[in-house]
Amino acid sequence: MPVTASITPAAGRSGRTGGELPDKPREECGIFGVYAPGREVAAMTYYGLYALQHRGQESAGIAVADGRQVNLYKGMGLVAEVFSRERLQQLTGHLAIGHVRYSTTGASQPLNAQPLVFRYARGMLGLAHNGNITNVAELRERLTATGSVFQSTTDSEVIVNLIARYGSSSLEEAVVKCMIDIKGAYSLLLITADRLLAVRDPYGFRPLCLGELPQGGYVLASESCALDTVGARKLRDVQPGEIISIDQNGLSCQTVLSPRRRAHCIFEYIYFARPDSEIDGFNVNQVRRALGRQLAREYRVQADLVIPVPDSGTAAARGFAEESGIPFEEGLMKNRYIGRTFIQPTQDLRDLAVRLKLNPVREVLQGKSVIMIDDSLVRGTTSRKIVGMLRDCGVREVHFLLSSPPVVKSCYYGIDTSDESELLAASQPVEEIRRIIGADGLYYLSQEGMLEVFGEYRHNLCTACFDGSYPVEIPAGSGKKAKYSLE
Image 1: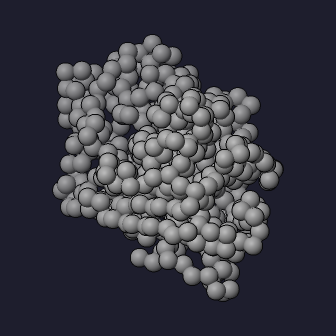
Image 2 (image 1 turned 45 degrees about the horizontal axis):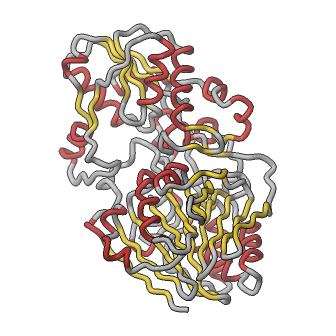
């Protein structure tokens, strides 16, 4: 069974920002899979990935199987840059997986683009991975010592090698053995010539959901918004520790690892996921509005207007306005044609980048006392520039409120936060941060208030970036700057 693979550097994009560190945590990845005989599965996967583009803008790829072989195409850039109509028409079959990537482990280069497609003892297998393996260095060293060869710098290739190592077993048995070996966060989609498998780690760090198509067939995706895009009805979330298998005989499920606790990433609700997605029973937009209402209950700030930093602070700002009674206004306009990544080759252009993305509405803001709401503050560079823009257009006071607690720890489970030394709240008190960004007031939502929004579900959330309580042990030497790379 041959595999045809093609990798292209589409439109010259790298996904990085000229070496400048991000002022927000970066998205991890997005994955999408479909089993739908008689349908154009490559086109469906394209639209599914389009709906998940916010989760990764460095590379995109689609692997399609037709019962005999697996065909793969992937490249650097956005989904629309990598795939043309002609390219999609060449990817024929009845099942497919797709991937959009932002690199949390490994370099931003074509070899690290996914899906990964390889040949092992039982034929062809493709893999798409969202998450981060915390014991990857140990596993890579062990595999290398016993003859494994690596072509990329991703932790996903370690998973590939483990499955191949257990290839004498059935695919499900090989995956189970792999799940026992690997630690950390992973939502996986795997494709053979005639089967689609979905796997979620036993803690459920990263999201994954299952949907059904109206004419028959199944869809799996990182977020339910991708199911909606292709017309699928959400059936449920894939459970932590569960393997789902789909083939001509239908759908089968088994829970193979039971967790001691669940640890779903709370930042999915705060920032990463699209507002129209539902994750593990919670609508993201409703959660964000509830966080804004809770923020208003904690801080009775007097002001003329509530404005969001679009789009990340919009839902929380609306909730704050509803609870406080202070009018909501769109005081900052976002350029909708600028993505979350932007090439900034010089310092002068970096300074202009915020104005290119956001522009204050002078007529709304001039002479006013303003409450500005965003979801989080990481390094403070963008926040400082936005506050400066508001001052320049005549705002009298700027009170900056965040709908999450201070980010003081790095994430090792698939989100690319800065190194702890670069997290502003890890080294500076609130009053000093307020001075640095130039606001008249700076207020964070309390961790208790944040968790109160989720009720009893609070015990199922990972909050390590706020309190350093890591559900899975982080090996020594796993600092953000210590990630292995072939760069």
